[in-house]
Length: 248
Image (cartoon, rainbow, N blue to C red; front, top):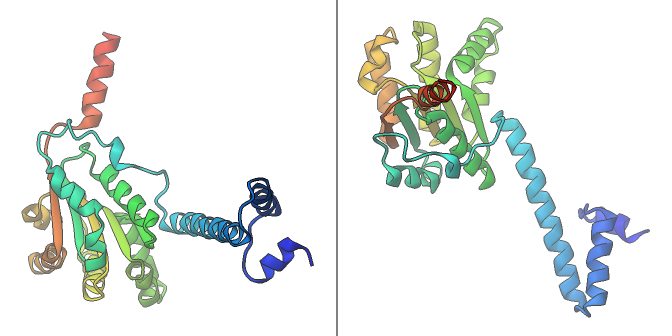
């Protein structure tokens, strides 16, 4: 058997060129054999971690990456940087809590949510990022096909679920019940949630049909939550105005 096939048989799947390069470096630099083996083992660990991250990222449906470093904290007129840093410590995931980003359109809520999911994936957590309306439409279809219980697990199982754009448009009682089911099941299982919403909680009844159900939904969301409120002018509007000024 070749060295590569021998290592592969015990679960080390580094490419042959990587293994040979480590060995050549060890010989050239007179590195002890155990140190060479340690380097091979570490390279395999790094390979597995990268592969695992790529798999988690693909399954998260996050799409393009976002980073906290790219968020312009100078633009909003109100945002608590300390609270943002707190949620990015990821303690709320371990505690089964929630991170809620509330503010008008164009202030970076979704960017922060995407960056937070990206950080969670990098830390080894399984996550799912989904538009709230898309998730509810998916569950409506699953219920009509008699597979609702199974499909609900898709939204309950990940360590972290991000529901983007909650309460952006009116939802009917059936979808409200499904949204409550997702939140309740995750709350009971102590699985973390990220929510972005343009409306403050006291405005949610204006787009949701049942005050009682909405109150129960909000109660579970805020119980173990960090709420980041963002105020200011739409960043996209600002950019459009700047482009118009340059053209003028």
